[in-house]
Length: 364
Ligand SMILES: [Zn+2]
Image (cartoon, rainbow, N blue to C red):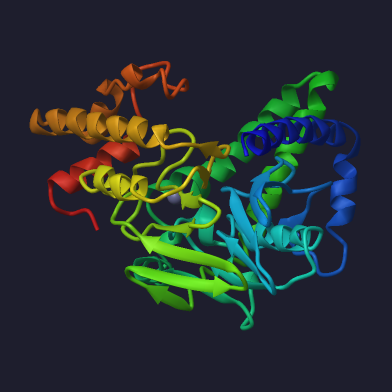
């Protein structure tokens, strides 16, 4: 299985290189593909949108190639008679792309979809699935999606409402100033961002149709699929998908390869929730962001990060430092051994604002 994980890294690297080459020669072809019958406007791309890394027989980590904005990793479980998809990416177009590309893995139909949590980049593709598909999530996830919360708030604002148009304007400005040799990559990035914006137009957040609060077990053929709520963490309703026989767990953003987004999290509860994750008997983790990994060491690293983050935020809160100024003062570099991206002081202010809500009793 170490071999499988190593091979998957190699495949990803190869594919990114290939996608880069494809982009150099065929941005225009991507637009032609948009006219193909049945393909939604948000699914305009060239080549493949996903790489499917099979970590154990029939269980795939679906990682975006970069040809289309997909937001998160999905996972795909091929059962005896049907398929389960975990997370639906950031748009109907991205979810459509995944469903199309799954057809190359198996002729079996997708019958179950799971939302690990309510965030837009994991649940905004739900609407492409019709009444023959059961969309499963925590009751909290259903409530957040039904209330429209996935289309507002500081995370959505940063990445989408203001973030996406700003990114498009920035790419256009760069393109206008770019020498001929640098244009192809920028043109491709601009096309991907514009497709994402176009694909968000007809988006209707669609909540799960089957919900639970503690656990739900599906037995499909010889496969046992356990959906578990382990406590509040990255949101108030994260669930993990645990395959006990295969010793695989699909964690959404409760545990990712790097440091997970804290802006809607519950810092006081998250480390204990990770203790309950550790108690499960698994070896391979398929996270919502980053590459798959083995073992449980990342649980310890992330618990240490979260506890330090909360302690630093608490001291600044007690000192009366506003959240944005506090975010600039925080320094997480002592965790750089495990999170090499932590090269400078300062953190995303969203997480500090969230910690302050916890201290003030307003986190929901
Ligand atoms: Zn998330």
